[in-house]
Amino acid sequence: MTRPATLPMQWSRKLSGKWLVSLLFLAVSLSMLYPLYITIVLSMKTVPDYQRNKVGLPRHWTLSNFSHAWTQGHMGRYTVNSVIVVALALVILIVAAVPAGYAFAQFSFPFRRTLLGGIVAFAIVSPGLQIVPVFKLATELHFINSYLGLALIYAAFSVPFGVYLMSAYFEGVPRAIFEAGIVDGAGVFSRFLRLAVPIARPGLLTLITFAFLTFWNEFIFALFILLDPNKRTLTAGVARLHDDVYTSQPLLAAGLVFTMVPCVLVFALLQRNLNEGLTAGATKE
Amino acid sequence: MPGRKLLTKVGPPVAFLLPVAALIGVLRVWPLEEAVRLSFTNWDGFSPPRGVGFANYRELWHDEAFRQVLLNNLKILAALPLFVATPFLVAAALQSRIPGWSLYRAAFFFPTLISPAIIGLTFNVVLKSDGGLNTVLHDIGLDSLRRDWLVDPTWALIWVILVIAWALIGVGTVIFLAAMGTVDASLIDAAKIDGASWWRVQRSVVFWQILPVIELWTVLVLIATFTQFFPLILTLTNGGPGHDSGTADLYVYQEAYSNFRNGYASAASVVIFVITVVFLGAFMGLFRWMRTR
Image (cartoon, rainbow over all chains, first blue to last red; front, top):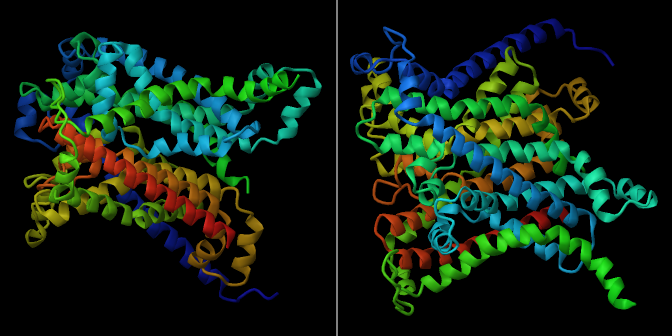
């Protein structure tokens, strides 16, 4: 096959094309990061400074908004509350979703497809749609002001997606691997714990990443369930801060930065697993 | 012993499904039953509910606002190609290793890390009449393009769709990038030798190679548009002006907690649930039909 003679010219055209696209991406990326920029800059402005210039860089950089948010805004306590709720919700979600995903992928039993479809269908039913009866039942079940109650609700709203993700992941694992366990004489449960769970690690970490972001950022159920101001989660606390007319914008921004830090950390820690975990269910064909 | 045999066959699945069954049964199915019961009452959220028969459903049938929000859900759904195509194009460009691609990947993922409610709040600040966008338009002398973006009925919904697309780019790009990494490089080289342009390679090779992942993303987006963005719309436009940019779940929330009509809100939620199930069934059927062809 003869190569086209104009190759060097095509090359230079392709290169400049790449730089043009890169320039476009630079502009779009800046728009993506604009909210982050505006929040961080705002959180380091003094109130008079903010009133004089709303968008530009601060004249005097200050960290006092953070210390105010931490003490007067009770961000410290709220952070602890959030960590408790999110940790509980993650444990409940994993205990419910991982064995279920395994069962749907590796066992055959009556109504398997119907059950799976029924559970996954709830993924499309919005929390906003169910909040009235959920709140009513939460009152009757004594979930009000209970961390565990809120965690159970969070898990219940994420578990359909969790079951879908885990069953897709386990379906990608050849049954022969698990059947080798039978030969070794391992029982159903030890096969699950010692073979399946380690294999499912990338899928599990993907689920944890997305569930963490969802739970950490949720505030509507949090405001409805944890009514005691001492039990507020961080995001709910910041939402309340926003509703409070006496809150200055820089103080609110400092609160927002507090909510963002753990998300960035979790993403940085778990991002390597995202690729593998997310596409596992879809690339097996 | 047949009984024992049945136990070893059904026992493990039952044990493995017990936690999820309890969770979904109590906190998803029971509320559904509760919603149906409440939909026949005039409950305000405080006083004891009183039965009103089918009055709520009759009112819904004539409720212009309810029709409007259902239509809005459909319009957002119609933007599905946008929600799928944007991350595909971004991923394709990044996969071609444009200069600075890994930095861009991180930047595009950033919206995923922040709460939808905060995304809505931020864009509210940018788009309100004296907000960032109008200030910029004024500064560069394009005053004629200035609008009261969130008060204009058409633009409010368009901005809701655009902000959702903005919020969805990151995850989509990461998923598509991972899938594109698995495409056989020799297929792409072969197409290039045949003189295929970059665009042709994406359209005729990459697209078909990662089709299962595109399908997965479409389902994820479908779920997200139905469930994830109610707080975003709440803080961006609060469904306004009127109900021109609100979705069905936001309407239920507003009826229940702004107007204290929990009974009516329950009836609306039951109707929306039935529509969703029918819609989901049709969508799944369509996918199965496409696959068998």
